[in-house]
Length: 157
Image (cartoon, rainbow, N blue to C red; front, side):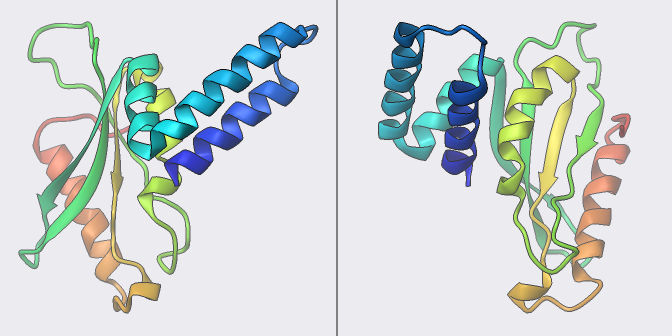
């Protein structure tokens, strides 16, 4: 989940960060990590949005069978470019071979990538086999997301 992803990133940064970092810098980073951890997942999400100049939200898009497909969308807050210009879209299909996995597995990476890449990052919450979904239900939901964004005029990258 997001909190675990952030914790692992922060600890890796602490352990393998800038060579020659002094004890005071490491202590400061540990204190910041403790503050963020106490804020819980919602606090981590808001902090990451501010740090990375992005917004994160859950939306839905219609599928061909009429059901809604939940998606997780990360958008740069300072887009630049021309008014009304459509940002390119990266659709992040989480791993798991249509059998396991959730889009939140990759949300941390989306939060730290979207601004620099100047694109929307969309992670569909498609049905997987362990939820009792029959093949090709998950693929149909993924196709609905692709059609939705290409139909809105976004370049898919």
